[in-house]
Amino acid sequence: MNLRVTARMRIKSRSITHVHRTIADASKIKVKIGQVLEPHDVLGEDTINVGFSSLNIARELGVASSQVLKYLERPLGSRIYEGELLASKPGFWGMGKRVITSPTDCILENVDLETGELRLKFLPKKNPLFSGVYGIVDEITSTGDIVIRTLGTEIFGLFGSGKQRFGPLIVPNRKDVIFSKAEITKDSKQQILVTGALILADALRQAVAMEVGGIVAGGINAKDARSICASVDPKKQVHSDIGLSLMVTEGYGALPIGDDIFQILKEHEGKYVFLSGNNPRLLLPSIEPDSIIRIRKVALSPHASLEKSPNTRIIETAVGESVRLIWPPYMGSQGQIVAIDEQPTLLPSGINCIMATVELKLRKLRVPLNNLEVIV
Amino acid sequence: MPGTVSIVDFFSNLDKVPLSNIRKWLRIKIDPHILENFIANRILYPSTVPVDGNEVEIDLAFFREAVSLEPKKLYDSLGNKLIIPSQFLDTFGSLQEIVFCILEVVKTSGIVGVYTKDERGVNQIGTIISPKIIIQPETTTVMVNGTTYQLKNGYLSLVPATNRHAKVRILDDEEIFISGGDLGIIFDFRKEEVKP
Image (tube, rainbow over all chains, first blue to last red; front, side, top):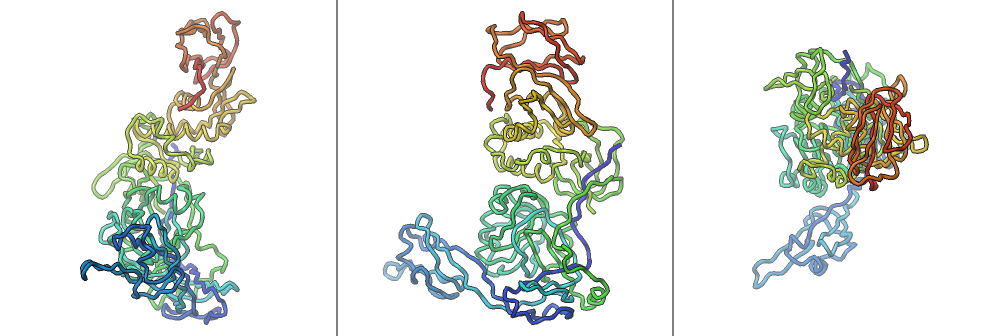
């Protein structure tokens, strides 16, 4: 009997791995190969080009899109700093005056007179770059890449977008929430937000505007994924960066983050993490000072491709294995195989399949073996 | 079973299939964004199989469009062969359904052998006959292995013929020998070019 099923590694717990930190100007790096690091150690001074944002002036002031230019307080191309007056509309007899202040330090780049949107280019900022982990510097390249050996738990997503970013992890109370635009505020700046079952396009746009560091979501609509990653097929997705890092853990549509991942995210709530979307990986570094003892004992090749997500493989399954359903109904649910049929069953679709009985939290389900994935 | 060839592995441009084209084949009503997510999940999890009839309908619509984007992956027009990976049976169930779907987007001509292919080799399972002229207005009389059939013009018709060498006569033409098999013989009496 053929009991082969797909197996996927989703979590690699407490292993020695590499984290890459980059300072564009290598001459500004202050650490040396072999140096032992603590999370607050400064690696050097980095200049960050944080990207773009947009602000709909027409909507905010309640004016026609084509008239937006005359309400700007500064000409296009000029610099403006956070809190300075950006645009205003006078009221009548002192009533109904509206003002917009700059949300950040930026350059007023251009205005779309059809939509009334003002595009803001963030000013490059000089920031000290912190290590963020307990670790040992294994390599420093001429291009400013600092390779640090560290101890951490890795979570692998299915696909994503964006370079590696670092920030505090914010986790909702429930894993099945649909994250809306309203939940992303100025306080979300540089945070790594876990958004539950689905991140919608307008929430993603808001996240970019608010300079959120990254998003971890159970699902995303295929249309949005296509516009960010160029394809819905992970093998064909191109490396991209929309101004934040995005990692999707379950698939397309509203799919709650799996119990296995959500539990670990909850345990690391508020701690600093590294999220890479292009190689969909979330690294949760160990915050125990004595982790350095274990890090010292393990050597890694500096070129070991530890940023790459592990591929799926085919394995022979058996009763007792932890699995995840990868097809409706209950797609994304996790449980344990409690029985496997010996004979194939003819499904209503007309396909003959070996069925497994999977015990979920609240029910038992019979599922075609093809429609589940072993969690390794 | 996982590890075998799914349509996602077989066709290279599945992510480029326009959603509007898939919808043209569907009788079921489904919200476009739910359909788009369904198709995307099929690409993400290629080993999965449809559970109910609605899912098969979507999968077959997707399959038709995949074939129409890359017909040469299945149809060798020079060699007059239609070669189907036998693993597609694990995904779609019915051989007849698979061949009919292909013929809805690929126009064959003359006599075309239908084969399945697996790791052991290629095995002929039937033949498609597409005569160029249909004389009778409503039906065409064909004889297969001595049995007479009245087949409706304007349609694809399947006549069972499991023997390796089936004798076929269309109207009063000369009798010809072609290969039957698990599929049988498909007579393509449609007049127009195929389109959804």
